Structures are given as C-alpha cells and as structure tokens.
Image (cartoon, rainbow, N blue to C red; front, side):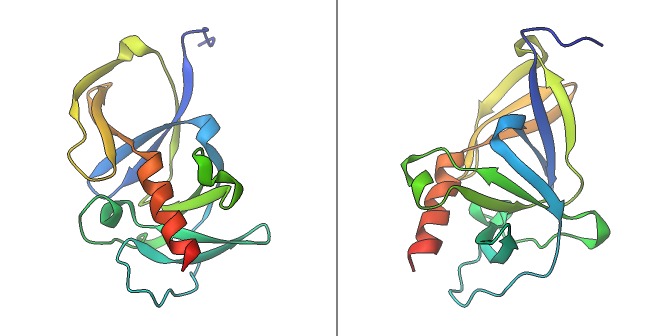
Length: 154
C-alpha cells in the first residue's frame, strides 16, 4: 500500500496490558533488553541505567510511571525503546529509555483510523484511542521527561 500525505508513520509499543502509540520520529532506536545498572534511589518507575552510544540513560517502567507496579521486560521479547526528548530539558537529557514487554511494530495511521475513547486514565497518559479495534494509549512524553530530569539531577 502506497503512503499518502495523511498517513503518519507510527510505532505500536507493547507494555503490560496496554499498547502505546508514538510517531516514528519520537524514537531514536529500539534495542534488545540487556542487564541494567541498578539504581539505588528506590524510585519504582526507574528500572535502572542503560548504556547506549556512550550515554547512560535512565530506563523507565511505563507501568510504574503511570501509577502501577513496575514491570521488567519478560524473556526474549523485551526491548528498550530509546526516545528523543522534546521539552526544554532536551539539552541536558536528549534521550530517555522505556522498557517494553514485546517487540514494537510499525503502522501507518491516518486520523480517520483513530477514534478517541477518553482522556488518559493514568498519570502518564494523554489519551486513549481505538485503532483497528485495539485500544492504544498516547503517552504524555513531557511527564516521562520530567521523571528523567528528576533521575539525572540526583
């Protein structure tokens, strides 16, 4: 199928009991989950630190950042999603990382294919939508970046 100007290349990201939806441009790289350097701060949303291209990135648990219990990637399918930051903190922390529960998949989405269900229910959700019969969540990246800023300033 040919891409049309109305289509936005996106990535559907599996996390526990949810699927996140982000545009491709927000993602710097998707890498295999590897052992993380532990974090001693006792923040439940901070799973640890990940070495990527000479940088030490905090790896967030989407579930804990969203008000639930933290979840480590399960088995061989877990990945670390390296995201570009977009807020004013970008100069200090140009990237952040998010643990997934499976392999993200590509999708080319038009606005007509999305139906808004409601505002986000969790602390890090902007809204939930329906895409091809599946409920997807658009994460609040500024909320996640605020957590990253907190982690990197300690």
